[in-house]
Length: 145
Image 1 (cartoon, rainbow, N blue to C red):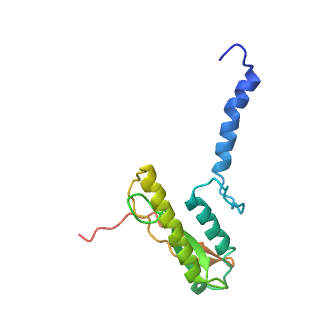
Image 2 (cartoon, rainbow, N blue to C red):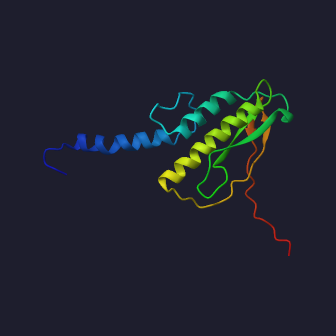
Image 3 (cartoon, rainbow, N blue to C red):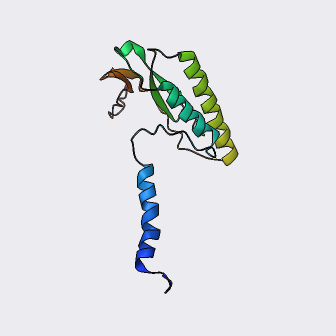
């Protein structure tokens, strides 16, 4: 460390990035709009999440899963749960496709690669009045032989 740098300043220089990184890992919903300089796929994903809203439901029949994003090897990056109660499914699907197309274009432009793992659709169910993705089961795949 240079002699002109004090310990508190050095700790702040190390601590601030760690605090920002910890905040980025938070799982709390963020309803703030995506920054104007954010990639198109991020802005469209934020628009999609706003359109999905609270995904209120009174039965499993109202809950659906929607593929979002695009992995470089193909297939979606993940899924979002949405409710057909008061929502236009065709509008949501069209927005999700626009978002996935933007993500595919970004992947191609940047040369990104992925592990090519398939993201299975978990489906959705009504959980405490809101649609949510069903939990993934962690069991091993059984062989037919």
